[in-house]
Image (tube, rainbow over all chains, first blue to last red; front, top):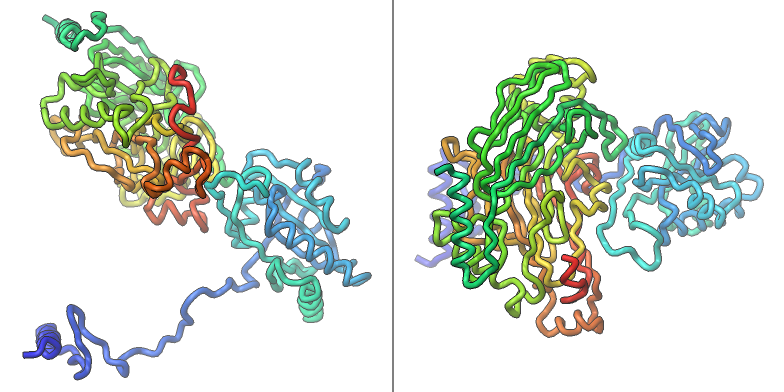
Length: 222
Length: 402
């Protein structure tokens, strides 16, 4: 018996022994597992693969501290939309890209930019926030950007609420960075004046695209 | 003849027989130690505050989890007095050491245990009450028993009582490895040098105590009061234990990215013994990058008279992943050799600094158990992850400082 027929016969026999399961299709060469015929597959109703989280489930109240020691909460900017992003002052990759593009976007928006407040939250895991480093880092960008730090509990709560991924890179410190390297989510979130998270976009969008995204979200109303 | 006397004479005899090695008659020392039992607040990696149970190094010393490291030599007379400052009973025991178990220690009371230090190895002291519950809540620590001599026939220092191991194959295997250190092409550099007495760790010796934290259990510990009863939770902690933090020396995630007690920063040819102890209730599967480790000794967890006693392995496997059952203790040797993933043709360039790979190099050690990886989301934010650093080539540090 040719080996292909032998294998098919074995598979059929095995299926029969398994209590009358559907026989293998005539063209398959089965070894070791029953074949499910295509027409027997149940249509999948759940999408496969990665889906971003439902934006309405993100966010929540927060309490952090600016470099001058002032407490900043979700209520500190009444009537304004919040552009929120996460990073760390020692970052020399995604964080400067995000804040530089955001700064350009705010310039492009002109007076419209008064409707938004940009917040940059330090997700470093040091026990004590480095306000001095934050102030120095933020000074490189648009004057309206506010850098925020917090205790581990405060920052961890925010990280959980926005499903931010952050992990310490166990690598020798890059010459391009100062201090530890932290891989982290880089989305920029838009929060409406009612403090509901309405959208998020990538940190590396060109400034013009960011302006489009910001205007589009605001146009949807609060 | 008392056992202690026998050990003294035995060790002295061995030293004399040791091919001209320095023969200083070893004397059994006496150690009078104290421990306190308290509750204490611990801030976890995400800022969560939990109450843990902890040992203190004296009646009113600073609490720590794990408890203080004690080092004694085999044959030493050890007396430990445990002071219970809490409002419920505790107990003290060291599995694998005969006689090292106290009666229940009443609230505010003290008990003393006395024993003769057994063969060399890594032992865990703990509170054995409430099954493993008090142990995983923080009442655990490490007692290292060092050998009286521990040298191989060729004179290489080991951390084991080679003269008292009744397994010639194990003695041969252990000796072959420690003799190869510093004398072979694969293991150039230094011999293994034991930690100085009284020190918790050294350049060539680390203690990693693995544990987990399930905050629901910690919430039962009310400072100054007996543990709150919750039958559904504590009837069988092995069934209800759902840890959220996976720790080495009571730190997890980012907090394990620093700390000399955990992180090894050595030059090629500085072999390092890692004494790994699992005080927790979850299995761990530790995976180290860069070098394979030699699994030298483990603990018998088989019920019976041998329970808790260290066993040298007759066949020593090179591991890059090793499993740690709850209660398990293993002595793992990190050879700190040129990483085997560096091609042979590139090794000279690595050492001269002219290769593509540059020293120092950093290698991760992480637990392969998925729950340790993903607790808190992402990659080990609350998990068991650390690293070791290969600082440079052979002779990068003066041998005298080892």
